[in-house]
Image (cartoon, helix red, strand yellow):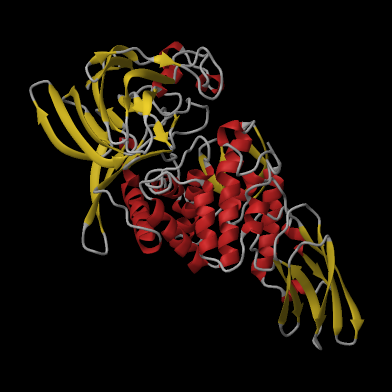
Length: 600
């Protein structure tokens, strides 16, 4: 491939050797041509983005040969009819490819690199080119059928694993970063040719810039082997190098200790400029981030963004689910494990709001006008684990379930909530129900069994069941397969005899969860189990101590309860002197998040 920065274009010769590793034959090959999503404002992808002329492009194919024979692409839309969409195509073969057979495919094409609108493109005002989803890529042939989805707005991708070898020729003053390992680099008076290789990945991405800083750091695995961390950072963000490296090392350590070892030789962090729309995205061995002009570390950014995008190296990169059909398997798992990593290494993350767009202020903002806070509180508010996903979840409680096919969800918000926020909350809830150690064991088995494979949701559910003596179908029926909501309440405490108290609990919504119910006295706490099925139930406790309060789900196992404030009932106001400050504070934060989640 040759890169021409002046004309913002590339010229490519691509060879694919596709091996039929299934037990089925095929008489066609299907391809993704994702770059064609930017062809016009009439494509499926562009329905969500306004593409000005400089933001438009397409793959201009000069020739296509299959085993030396010239063939033509047939464009079609496998999921949503749109005659203007050419992001999927196929070739019909003259000879069937049997199991174990291979086919050689050769493309020659050119492509103009568009202005960055979403993921791919150049940054305005900078010689920064980020080029993703740029080449014709074979779809996934599984169970005798091709799975080759269009480029849907908001959604990601699905591809098969392969071995990549890519040569990129560029003017000498440009630095190239890419998926994999830089095997060699040769230069003449004008140009430099980079040679990148990587096995066991399902995509290849690259960037070119003549004004970016590169530093390397080393992470040492327990066995003594090393991983090179390459950080490509904008000059104005040079001060973030150390924070970027620390965040990546924390991720590598946490995954190695709990889930699995990162298997590649290197990982590249790309800090994109402010005018680029390529930030916050994951690719095999490489991910993109950005940072605000002001970003106090106690606010958890850009550390959380780094942690989230790195975690996709496992959930998407190595465990390669179909992101178009079951986006929760990568986005939900990544959101969950990112939160676990962040709170393990930084237990206290403080809430902030923005003043004049850029300036972070510690506290809670309830109402603004023209970016000027009007109703707010200035106080150090510790953000509870997963609280930000709770805020988003409140905005979309019932439209869609996690089990729904991702691209069929009706709105962007319903996609985000059912792919990111609700799955994160469900996984936290599962962990709190089963226990941390069992949850980590489940994730480790999931990784060991499905790395370099394409799992589905039921594959994870089966591993959960394999590790539980209890039938967990009830859990996935309530949280995964249906769009139920949860709200449990303690309605009253009544003294029936000298030492017996009746606690009335209610289920106010359709979701069912197996709860603990606690009775607080001046000397101890008593617990009972409640299966949560009845709409109301009276639980009887015996104690000679003074009763102060009762609470359902006192350990906050079910993070999808939509109103934690009604989970408790107090006998007298003295409960505020008896209950822990942490419980009271969590009530206050939860109510604040509910208010914030309903705004906008």
